[in-house]
Length: 259
Picture 1 (cartoon, rainbow, N blue to C red):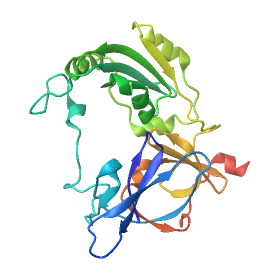
Picture 2: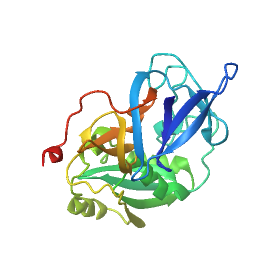
Picture 3: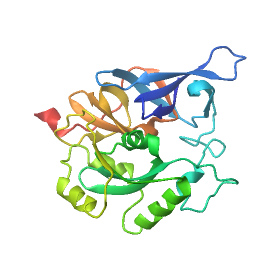
Picture 4: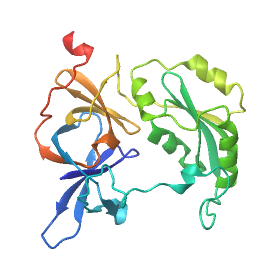
């Protein structure tokens, strides 16, 4: 059994059960719920390439034994549109639908500009684990949106690293800094998100698949285990073989464990 992906929209971990028979080339993928209260009880084994998913809702998996993780060179992919600044990098431009240019904010005070299809705006903000969001512009295609994004990115970042999001867990959001930033725009709409993590302090960063789920915030999974709270980057789990049991190594404890 291997972790082969995750879905930040549904809050699930994608696990391949392997081939059903020796002659089968693919395994079946199960979506394991990461909703609050779910129990995970896996120890992590060897890590190697997670292979590739295919089929309806990515429910089939072709394994790969290459040691590079989470993906080897053959299975590593880059979404070309993420590098676009207005000059299309595809053979033919195909983003002729409404796009939104937005701001996303992460506790305590990390801000970024981004682009998404207009109908996916709220979903995209949740996928990233944003605490706040603001819809700045709606434009008729992706090219115009990327041009606006590139222009705004001369003063604002167009990315926030997962490490920064992890460091902000449990921190109070800086509403003053956010409102000050928004004062420079004619904002179309704003969004506030609560992921129900109820954190009184910053969780300990670890790579584990054992504990009681508090919830997810973008691709960050928060778990309670042995009196401590841990934050796991789901991407760091991809590629690991899983076996039944619990974490089999010593973990750093959070301060709350000694209260």
